[in-house]
Amino acid sequence: MEQYSDELSGIFQALADPTRRAVLGRLSKGPASVSDLAKPFEMALPSFMKHIRFLEGSGLIRTHKEGRVRTCEIERKRLAAVEGWLLEQRALWEGRADRLEQFVTRIQQQVKPK
Amino acid sequence: MTQTQSNDFDLTTSRIIKAPRALVWSAWADPVSFAQWWIPTPIKCKVVAMDLRPGGSFVTEMSENGGPFMPHLSACFLNIAEAERIVFTNALVDGWRPAAAFYPTPLTATITFKDHPEGTEYVAHVMHKDRADRDRHEELRFHDGWGTVAAQLAALVEPR
Image (cartoon, rainbow over all chains, first blue to last red; front, side, top):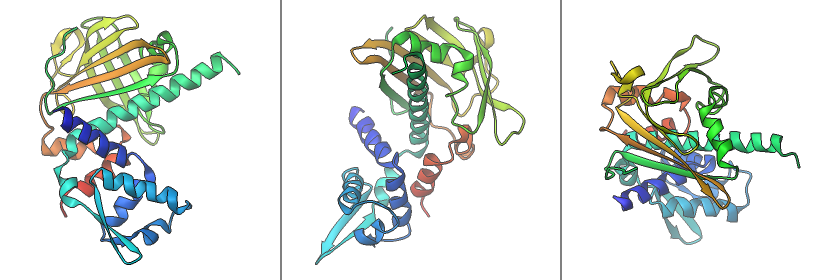
């Protein structure tokens, strides 16, 4: 059970970032090379590679290298294995915790000006 | 408080919030503050009832695009410990009356606030009775204005 939660957290973290979501969105249409995937983003390649590795680590995508080209592909089985409903519930509560944290931080800055 | 053993339909989320526990508590327990973060902007949240005592009513409504306020959460507090814990369920409403409907599935949420060297440890532990059925799942996508991550996720997850 603990392992299941960790797995879910990993997947959620992978999906919590707009760049990674965009990459998954693109890959849902078919495999693509890292350089093609990186094009829409104003980001240095090493930074972009971190996102790719994060996605690979979470098992949501797999990559393979042929010559100089690294191709990424979505791991549909992995996505299908995720309980979508619970993940949405988690996303809901994660969002609430994030907004509470932001709200409190903002209030505190008003109370204690630097 | 003892917690029942977790199952596949439980989830826990936690944050270390760099602020005193009293401040984090008041962000939750003060309806005006609560309405500012419970639902993501630009959707407006209205706290219709937040009677912080066991059996007390807990009702929120939401309004999208300046439209009328619609039901969001209808629940009942089960346990309150000032600045420490809030427990509520949507399976009951005001005065422990059984709820006519619950959305999207019966749940009990335990919110705890603990002192932490960096501020406050905030934990939400949510227990669900079971998975939402298919129809509710469809509705859920639009619930809470959760139209970004969850919707994209659902689109990715669903077999095409």
